[in-house]
Length: 52
Image (cartoon, rainbow, N blue to C red; front, side, top):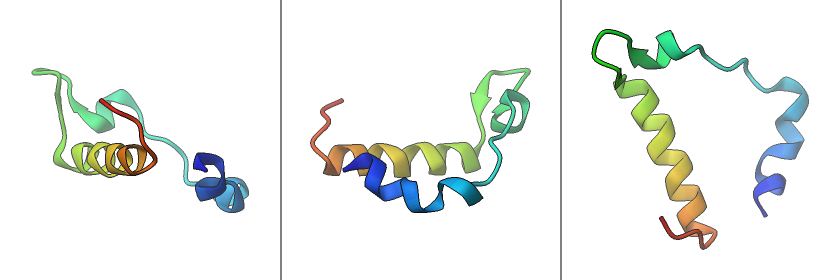
């Protein structure tokens, strides 16, 4: 189920971001943008039945 969500966009997927782009390196705190990505991914996984 998870692969089906992403495989059609595999060839045109955007590049990932570096640690420095996702976190404040001084406080090692995730950025708001990164937390939105994380929360969305976690929601998808929970909908598929994964328990955190």
